[in-house]
Image (cartoon, rainbow, N blue to C red):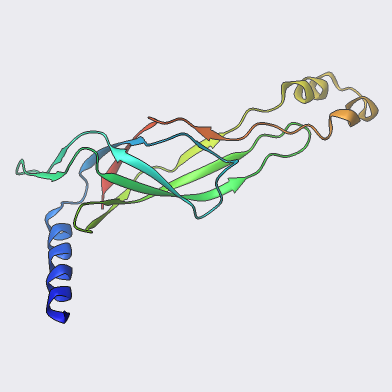
Length: 155
């Protein structure tokens, strides 16, 4: 049993050692995500949208492999029409056999829509009594659509 564990660990590290740093990996968001349903620390799933080859022409990451990002910041909707926002950082690609390839990319950010009525009243400079009924109106949730494309890089 112990021997098998060491063999598996060496196979996983062997796969990671073969993958060069700096390879471009195209990713696409697997499904719609919303700040309504997510919290900081939640994983978000992406799929590798094209095969990735190393400098010698060997396939190192297959199309369809699963990549993960983490919600690193989230701000909920606020009163007076203030919209929600969320930020996602990229973590790793998971290969069959258990190997994980660390990746990096610019953080992906999303903002909801601000409520236009409260914004308009604010621009008009309406006195506070006129805007009081709208104080409890919240802005929209931050959303990212399935298929959103990102270019990540192996570390």
